[in-house]
Structures are given as C-alpha cells and as structure tokens.
Amino acid sequence: MKMDDKIRAIMAETQWRQQQLAEMLDVGQSTVNRWLAGSEPRGDRRDRINELYERVVENSKTAGDRPIRGEPEILAVLQRIEGLTAKDIEIAFGVISNALKVSSVGSAPSGADDRSQPATPRRESSPSR
Image 1 (spheres, rainbow, N blue to C red):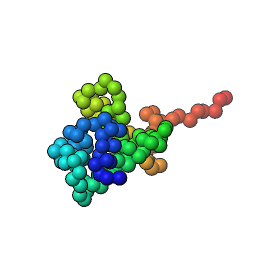
Image 2 (tube, one colour):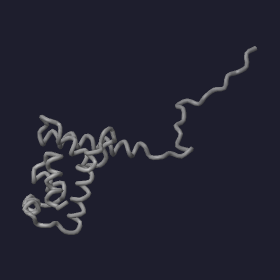
Image 3 (cartoon, rainbow, N blue to C red):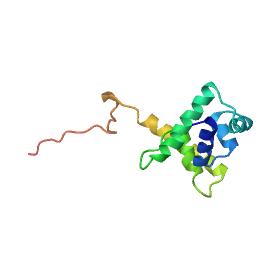
Image 4 (cartoon, helix red, strand yellow):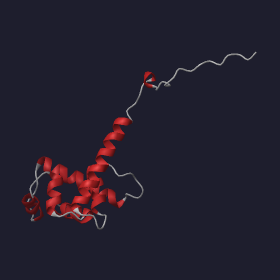
C-alpha cells in the first residue's frame, strides 16, 4: 500500500484533519499535504506513519474487545466520540494520561518489606482465668 493511501486511511479511521495528523507525527501540516499529493516520507517519519497505520487502521479491523493501548489509540477513540470539541478531547486525553501514569506508578512491584504496618501494635490476648 502506498504511503498516501495509508495516511488517508489513518485520517478516515480517526477522522483527523491534516493538522491533527501532523501534530501526531510531529511535522507541519504542509508536510502531510505533500505526502497526500504523492511525496514519499523518509526515515523515521515513514516508520511513524507505518506504526500509526498498524495501530489505528489494522488494529481497528480486529479490535473487538481488546484493550486500548498507547496514545495514538486513546486519541483515535476520543476523536470518534461525536460532540467532543478539540478542547474536550485535549482535556479528556490529559485526564486519561495522568490516570495511567498514576496507575503505573502505583502498580510497581513491592517487596516483602513494603507491607503496611498496623497503626497500633497488636496486643496478644491474655488467657482467661
């Protein structure tokens, strides 16, 4: 598949405009426009397009109930929610990103010495008389 077709497929699946795709790929909108006109991206830019295509387009064909992983997939889902403005998406993405960061920090493996200790020491019961 040609690169311009992959770019169009990404834009169709995510409903992104050229500017939004350009921001995701860290390029200018005019660069995306040139690619759509047939210019071939090179190097890491081509790799990023292929990766995004695989995540967004290929995975959407078999997505089903699988988990959403990675920023491009999260953004793609948010973009598909009808009625959200660009600001709404930005805010929602920020909240989700922060929650994932907190969750990943909180789920770090703990050792045996990391167990929480009771606030007051336990007292052994005395035998009844």
